[in-house]
Image (cartoon, rainbow, N blue to C red):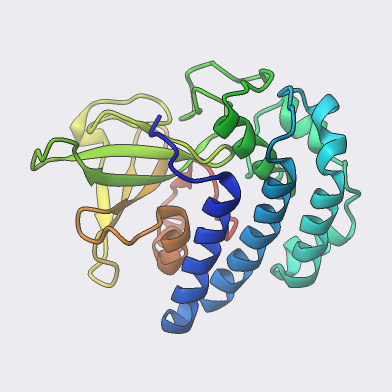
Length: 264
């Protein structure tokens, strides 16, 4: 994993600021970006409240410390999220679905709302080095899962290789704890396929530095942003500016390993 150089609450705040910055200049994605900015601010508040607490990594024991914060996250999504998601949040109690999400696949595709509520806690666990309890699929080595928390990879990044090598290092970032893990340059982070002819990349001139890294074996993909082109990018935030690529991928029969903040 890449090292952390800022507190979890500061990381969430930085993402919120990036989303606020991009929204006015990205009309096609302004609404998702504004929603993301507000969600990050709510998550930053939860992370700040958890900072310095003695956490166990066990949901049942730690949840009371951030129940109020989870309620505020739900309320924000109910008031500002896209229609279907907002309706789901209005009908959800603060602890509903959390145990099933945590004990199961830990995927936002199954329960976006649970992922949104638990992300600050898992991020603080990662920053504190407190290993979370395993889920049903944690440590299976499948589906691009994070070595630390069992969350799924939701965004990729190509970063300059330390030491000045001209080639970029490929990473995937976890949708739960937010940490990045290096992955092989030619390999599907979902199923492990390594045959180059089964791993097509797709890109658009409208979104330079962004590409879809797909797999024709498992029909999944991860979106990857090139930070050697623009080091200001925050991949999980800038991801929202190229939602058209995700919609195109769905039309072609590919499924993202883990949905981004827009739910696709």
